[in-house]
Image 1 (cartoon, rainbow, N blue to C red):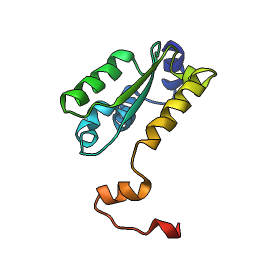
Image 2 (tube, helix red, strand yellow):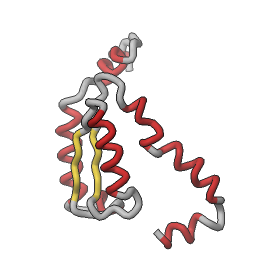
Image 3 (tube, helix red, strand yellow):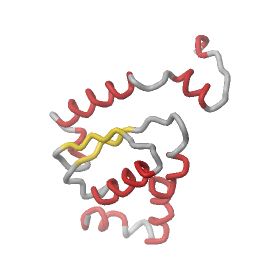
Image 4 (tube, rainbow, N blue to C red):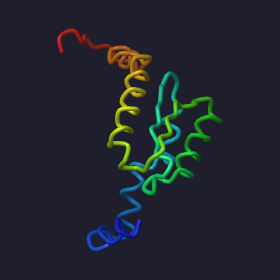
Length: 121
Protein backbone atom coordinates (compact mmCIF):
# COMPACT_ATOMS: atom_id res chain seq x y z
CA UNK A 1 0.00 0.00 0.00
CA UNK A 2 3.00 2.33 0.38
CA UNK A 3 3.25 2.89 -3.37
CA UNK A 4 -0.42 3.84 -3.51
CA UNK A 5 -0.04 6.10 -0.50
CA UNK A 6 2.95 7.84 -2.08
CA UNK A 7 0.85 8.65 -5.15
CA UNK A 8 -2.18 9.90 -3.20
CA UNK A 9 -0.56 12.00 -0.44
CA UNK A 10 0.73 14.84 -2.67
CA UNK A 11 -2.74 15.55 -4.10
CA UNK A 12 -5.20 14.57 -1.36
CA UNK A 13 -5.38 15.04 2.40
CA UNK A 14 -6.25 12.17 4.71
CA UNK A 15 -9.64 13.78 5.42
CA UNK A 16 -10.35 14.12 1.67
CA UNK A 17 -9.42 10.48 1.20
CA UNK A 18 -11.76 9.40 4.00
CA UNK A 19 -14.59 11.41 2.45
CA UNK A 20 -13.97 9.89 -0.99
CA UNK A 21 -13.67 6.39 0.47
CA UNK A 22 -17.02 6.83 2.20
CA UNK A 23 -18.70 6.86 -1.21
CA UNK A 24 -17.50 3.34 -2.02
CA UNK A 25 -17.25 1.86 1.48
CA UNK A 26 -19.89 -0.88 1.47
CA UNK A 27 -20.05 -0.94 5.27
CA UNK A 28 -21.55 2.56 5.15
CA UNK A 29 -24.22 1.41 2.67
CA UNK A 30 -25.33 -1.86 4.25
CA UNK A 31 -28.92 -0.70 4.74
CA UNK A 32 -29.37 -0.20 0.99
CA UNK A 33 -27.75 -3.55 0.30
CA UNK A 34 -30.28 -5.38 2.46
CA UNK A 35 -33.33 -4.43 0.41
CA UNK A 36 -35.51 -7.35 -0.70
CA UNK A 37 -34.92 -9.13 -4.01
CA UNK A 38 -31.45 -7.64 -4.48
CA UNK A 39 -29.06 -10.28 -5.77
CA UNK A 40 -25.39 -9.61 -5.05
CA UNK A 41 -22.13 -11.14 -6.11
CA UNK A 42 -18.69 -10.37 -4.71
CA UNK A 43 -15.60 -11.21 -6.77
CA UNK A 44 -12.65 -11.18 -4.40
CA UNK A 45 -8.93 -11.79 -4.57
CA UNK A 46 -7.60 -13.84 -1.65
CA UNK A 47 -4.34 -11.85 -1.72
CA UNK A 48 -5.97 -8.44 -2.21
CA UNK A 49 -4.00 -5.60 -0.60
CA UNK A 50 -6.35 -2.85 -1.82
CA UNK A 51 -9.66 -4.24 -0.55
CA UNK A 52 -8.51 -6.25 2.41
CA UNK A 53 -10.10 -9.71 2.72
CA UNK A 54 -10.99 -9.01 6.37
CA UNK A 55 -13.04 -5.96 5.32
CA UNK A 56 -14.81 -7.94 2.58
CA UNK A 57 -15.49 -10.78 5.00
CA UNK A 58 -16.98 -8.30 7.49
CA UNK A 59 -19.42 -6.95 4.88
CA UNK A 60 -20.37 -10.46 3.76
CA UNK A 61 -20.90 -11.53 7.38
CA UNK A 62 -23.12 -8.52 8.11
CA UNK A 63 -25.18 -9.13 4.96
CA UNK A 64 -25.54 -12.80 5.90
CA UNK A 65 -26.79 -11.83 9.37
CA UNK A 66 -29.46 -9.75 7.59
CA UNK A 67 -30.48 -12.79 5.48
CA UNK A 68 -28.98 -11.22 2.33
CA UNK A 69 -26.12 -13.62 1.64
CA UNK A 70 -24.29 -12.61 -1.53
CA UNK A 71 -22.77 -15.09 -3.91
CA UNK A 72 -19.01 -14.99 -3.33
CA UNK A 73 -16.22 -15.91 -5.72
CA UNK A 74 -12.76 -15.95 -4.11
CA UNK A 75 -9.95 -16.15 -6.59
CA UNK A 76 -6.38 -17.08 -5.67
CA UNK A 77 -5.01 -13.69 -6.74
CA UNK A 78 -4.75 -10.03 -5.77
CA UNK A 79 -6.93 -7.01 -6.52
CA UNK A 80 -5.71 -6.14 -10.01
CA UNK A 81 -5.01 -9.76 -10.94
CA UNK A 82 -8.75 -10.38 -11.26
CA UNK A 83 -8.40 -8.77 -14.70
CA UNK A 84 -5.56 -11.06 -15.80
CA UNK A 85 -5.79 -14.51 -17.39
CA UNK A 86 -6.88 -17.01 -16.12
CA UNK A 87 -8.64 -15.17 -13.27
CA UNK A 88 -10.54 -12.91 -15.65
CA UNK A 89 -11.96 -15.92 -17.49
CA UNK A 90 -13.01 -17.62 -14.27
CA UNK A 91 -14.62 -14.41 -13.00
CA UNK A 92 -16.36 -13.71 -16.31
CA UNK A 93 -17.84 -17.21 -16.43
CA UNK A 94 -19.15 -16.98 -12.86
CA UNK A 95 -20.52 -13.45 -13.35
CA UNK A 96 -22.33 -14.46 -16.54
CA UNK A 97 -23.83 -17.45 -14.76
CA UNK A 98 -24.89 -15.15 -11.90
CA UNK A 99 -26.47 -12.65 -14.30
CA UNK A 100 -28.51 -15.35 -16.02
CA UNK A 101 -30.11 -16.09 -12.66
CA UNK A 102 -31.00 -12.47 -11.92
CA UNK A 103 -34.01 -10.50 -13.12
CA UNK A 104 -34.01 -8.63 -16.42
CA UNK A 105 -33.68 -4.83 -16.51
CA UNK A 106 -37.46 -4.51 -16.84
CA UNK A 107 -37.92 -6.75 -13.80
CA UNK A 108 -35.48 -4.57 -11.83
CA UNK A 109 -37.59 -1.51 -12.64
CA UNK A 110 -40.73 -3.37 -11.54
CA UNK A 111 -39.04 -4.21 -8.23
CA UNK A 112 -38.36 -0.51 -7.65
CA UNK A 113 -41.99 0.32 -8.43
CA UNK A 114 -41.38 1.97 -11.80
CA UNK A 115 -43.14 1.09 -15.02
CA UNK A 116 -41.27 1.63 -18.27
CA UNK A 117 -41.62 0.13 -21.73
CA UNK A 118 -38.15 -1.23 -22.50
CA UNK A 119 -39.18 -2.46 -25.94
CA UNK A 120 -38.56 1.05 -27.32
CA UNK A 121 -34.98 1.18 -26.04
